[in-house]
Image (cartoon, rainbow, N blue to C red):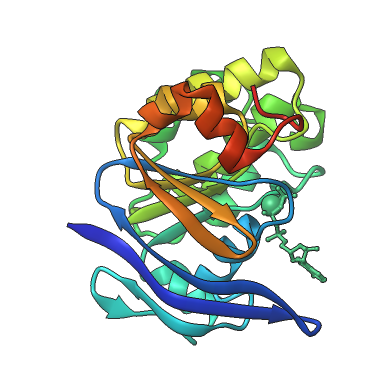
Length: 232
Ligand SMILES: Nc1ncnc2c1ncn2[C@@H]1O[C@H](COP(=O)(O)OP(=O)(O)OP(=O)(O)O)[C@@H](O)[C@H]1O
Ligand SMILES: [Mg+2]
């Protein structure tokens, strides 16, 4: 059963054809990783799903169209989105950052604090003084507080020091067991650890779908994702 489905989604940004017919389905209760080199359209794909980029094509959640709806309605249909830049309120406490995100009448603070016990001891701390890894935990927690059908998480380890990458990877592995997730990530070690399904994007199209075991093949990785960058 697929939770989220995209069919022939196109996005133009300032005259450039960024998404060129993106089609995929996200299976339920699994982590699907969306991979691809820099600038191929991964973040734009998530933004199109969230209604943050104008698109053409079909986008359905649980069989119902969400295409063309305003972002606040898409959020309410049950999508938790953790953007690339985290969007933490640095002057507010951890607790207030979480409270602002509450949408459900019974937000699941128990889940958040059991996944991230570190946050429970820091509820009064100003979010701006947290480590990058802890800030990412807050960003992920905001999406987990409400009952969502799917989580979209954009490069949670981007720009983090190696020690913090490990910390966030641990967190995601814990969340993974509980949810349907579309995870954009360039850290292949993390992808291999948490993903059960992979999508590879190049130049605004999905060029491969399959099992993460393909990532063990160096030639495959080289041809699909190129060399260098943050792949490891
Ligand atoms: N606001 C914008 N204005 C102009 N061009 C944009 C804008 N947002 C994205 N683009 C262009 O669209 C293309 C896809 O960008 P996108 O951010 O989706 O890539 P990405 O795969 O997420 O890359 P990265 O791995 O660097 O995060 C890029 O060529 C980018 O320059
Ligand atoms: Mg991106």
